[in-house]
Image 1: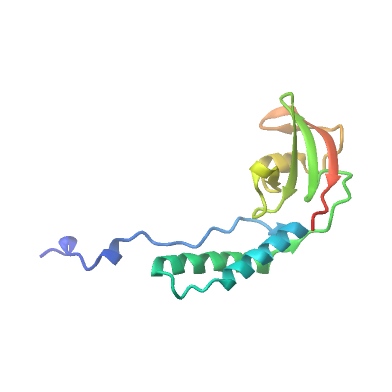
Image 2: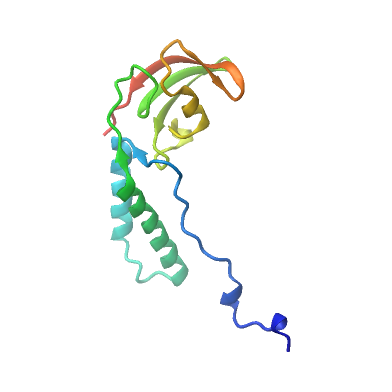
Length: 156
């Protein structure tokens, strides 16, 4: 029989399981982000994976490896002064006639539905180091975003 038609086992044809991708660049975190990362690691470490089936245990261990790596590489950034748009500031801005407010945080802490945007996002990169009243280019449009307000976020 040809080797092409031989099948050793079902495991041979399963999709490979990869690690959870680590975002590129530095792992900057706010004080809140550091606390949340520590809590996540502690919660995952507290889980007994013994009674889990093999797939669930592998998934749990993969997630724990991700969060341990993120904790080990976390670089807590100092609280900003609020003079310019920076990591850890709440920025109120006007874009296309609408006022919006977001906080620039680390990749793992980002939650757009809660108004927390990653500092590595395009909109954050466009606004970094801008001052109140300044207009910045975004998405190929000149003066697309106007900075209305900046305040430091000191959540612990």
